[in-house]
Every structure is written in C-alpha cells, then in structure tokens.
Amino acid sequence: MSARFASPDALLDAAGAPLGPGDWFEIDQARIDAFAEATEDRQWIHVDVERATAGPFGGPIAHGFLTLSLLSFLAAPLLDVDGVAMGVNYGFERVRFLQPVAVGSRVRAVGTIGSAELTSTGVRVVQDLTIEIDGSDKPALIAQWVTLLVPAA
Image (cartoon, rainbow, N blue to C red):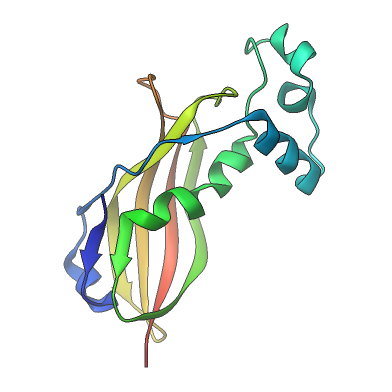
C-alpha cells in the first residue's frame, strides 16, 4: 500500500503518516550467496548450509546488511511522491538488527513518515521503517532512513 503525495513539500506536514505494509519477499540461499560474494562476507552462518544447520540458528541466516540493503527495494513502493527529479540516500539515523532472517523467510517493509524538513536542495524525509518477518512477532530490523527528495525543475 503506497502513501501518495502531490509534491515533496506535501511531506512537510505528513509526520506519522503510515507507509505500507509492502509485499512479502522471500530470502533464498542464492541471494545470500550472491551477497556474500559481492561483499566478501562469507561467514559460515550465511553460506555453509551444513554447518549452519548444526549451528545456533538451525540453518543459514541472511546477513544483517543484506536485509538492510533490501530497504531500497522493499520500501520504494511504500512512498509515492510526484514532482521529484531524484531521491538521494542521505543515510540512517538509527539501525537495529533485532532478529536473524532464516533462509526461506519472507520479509516486508512497513512504517511511518517520521519527519520532513525543507533544505536548500529539497525535502529531507525520515522514514521510520520496520522489516517484518512473516509469522514472527519480532521484526528483523528497525531503521530511521533519511532521504533527500529533490524537486523536479
């Protein structure tokens, strides 16, 4: 479910507006392996299925940074703002990894608009986001994601 705004300026009074939930997305071993290769993080709890099955999580888990990086994909459909030339990733105010994401789990994003402020180049928006795990009461992560929305000329 997308929250739609007519312009970046319309976000200035939108604190607390709900975002999502988005669609479920499955985390498979192939994605974890590809992320391990791309980042050079081949820790056994992620890529060694046999060893991870005997390990503390009962099977391989996704990298926390993989789950975080999926925010670009998972949260994009939650906020639709007209009149934007580009959105720039400004960073994070807070990130907490609360629970591992097991291979085969489905995750989705949900959240609210935390705040928005006018800057000299656009509107800086803070989204308070949660990555939920299907069937779990505890989320995978929470994050305050800051994005700069540059208005179209």
